[in-house]
Image (tube, rainbow over all chains, first blue to last red; front, side):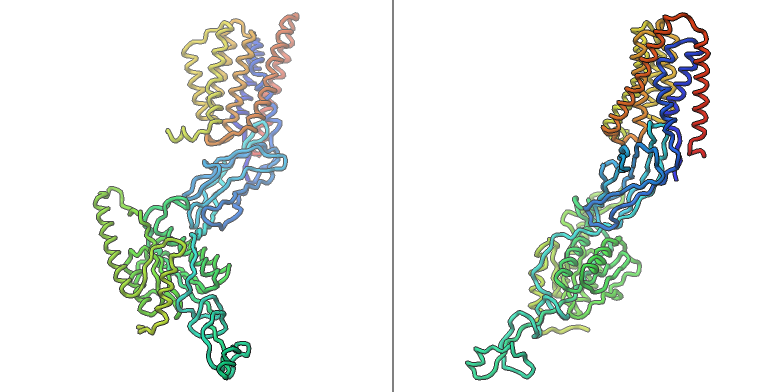
Length: 431
Length: 174
């Protein structure tokens, strides 16, 4: 509940009118009365339009969950606001939140329908975004009385990562599911022709190939490869964020690339009918189990939006639980700057899982340095770190784990096909 | 400081400039009416107006207006010259500009709708000044009526009393 108080303008008009008329009468100077007569009118009108009730204000955001770069509206609702003429809303600045108007301040006359000014809001980066504190000011008719400025507090918006453009036509290397779109190694009721063989008891009659059967004199049937869904485990490196994020339209940090790529992959594989899981390494270590469908995709995106870069104290790669079942395609999204991530990847490869590392370190990334650090020393340290990283990636590639930089559509096609071909070959697996 | 100045919207610049110029304009209007305000008074009024333009809800604007009106009442040989209307127009303009600027922070774009509404209101309330000026002119030519001053004093006191009651009964205080 907000209370009304007289404005500086009303006080000015009232005092000036009183002094002018009083002084004019007492001093016998009609000029003073002439000069202050308009102020007497303004004061009288301001007082006459004194509001009678104390208003209550509520602000709410129309959508609390949206993708970065999308926009929503912050609406104001007022109760007991009779006699109101003008409303001002002033929204504070918050990191990675754009407002329209740009300065966050908007004022408008209240229409007869009671329409109030709206502030348009757009989160410019994925994550949980707290909107800036809002202040409102209400002015009564003839600007005689005012409420506020009153704090309303800023709401929260969850900005889901935009899925970077991505498409892949490659199939999962070792699908081991029920019903899906990936060709399996076993025969079944798929649409892809596999072979023609002699009839066995239990074969369906509609599978009989009559031409071959007539030519050979024995019944032959056509077989097809089963089509199955596949488990896709997306591992997200949330241990650190390298580089500076410029939001959805600006430069991307390593975590920006990681999260947006993970969102794109999750969206793609969910749409193709595969079961997708997400495990965040670092941060709060969240895990979303395997699932499919729109609701599951929303859960995955919300989990990705909650990532806060953080390195747990007890980070030991041997103790990491990835819950990767046999046949699961593991996609590791990481700038590969942490040894624990590289070790964990190598362990997954040794388990015989098809693992693919997607390098998410942007080319133009510059390291964050402490204030006062010598820039030449910092640049040298960064170069040394990159050299170490190249060595680790080479070692990883030698274990049979492909490493590809993220570049949107087609990033995975060639390597997934290679992994699928490799999956046809017999392998020795460490268990 | 530069950032603060850059944040001020054009409409706020206009309103605050008018606030700054209003009271000094009253002193300038007294020159053709035969007045001769001192430079010190002019500088003082300008300074107060400038402070009022920066802090729109401060009493500096009131002080500048009171000084300007007082200077007109005491320093102009013919206070009822037609220039009094020009001076009143400047005062009303400054007051309305101050009201508008005080609607929100310096980053607020006042908008054409609000400006139009207050332009009309300002013109309407200013009409009281030429009306009063004409009445005074007519009454001046008539024989002297001492009771009119008593009646004026009663009206004035009544107005002050009504204002005080209205302000005390404002819902914020209840």
